[in-house]
Length: 218
Image (cartoon, rainbow, N blue to C red; front, top):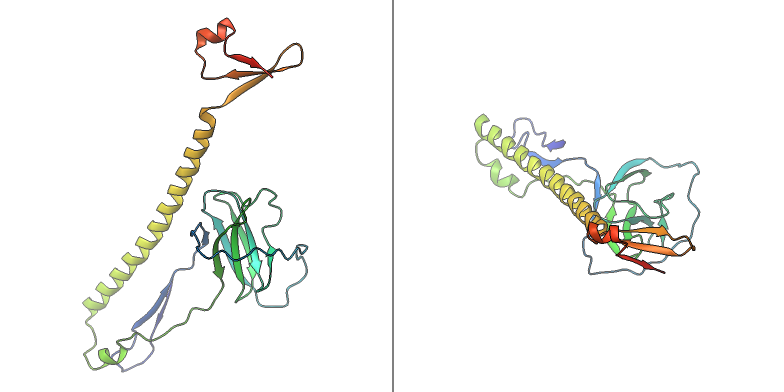
């Protein structure tokens, strides 16, 4: 957690909180984007050469609930960067990159190629609060007021982290429910002596299974 405060010794706004920033993993989610830019594949080989620019590390995590592909958008076309993921970046997996300030990434469904969200590595701009001059004409806040303000900021920061954790847990629960739904109607296949495939319906009663019922040949 980083905080930027004004450095103005002797001024009423000295040590005023200007910005609070929590460094976190970039959560890739389905933002239901109304704007769907056309997918243009750069069709480039994975880059494995040396980088001659300053690295800005970034980590992405898939919380969309289904496989996705991650692309670097250069303004003209999109270059796949989730290399080695033939079936897409799976839910709740992470990928780390050495990127560059200003680079834009797009997450798309692994199968549909529908854009889920876009993220750009950008600067954090520190600006004075709108009421800086207004506060300057008033006495400096008491230590108790400053302590209360800090407690409120800490609470807001904790609330945001809890919200992100809850969102991730809900996505995991949805994935587990979807998996359970698919396995409920599971069937068991077996080979008959003549080489045909027999489909055994797991929903058949035990008595029927003993009697040989519940089997169909294909």
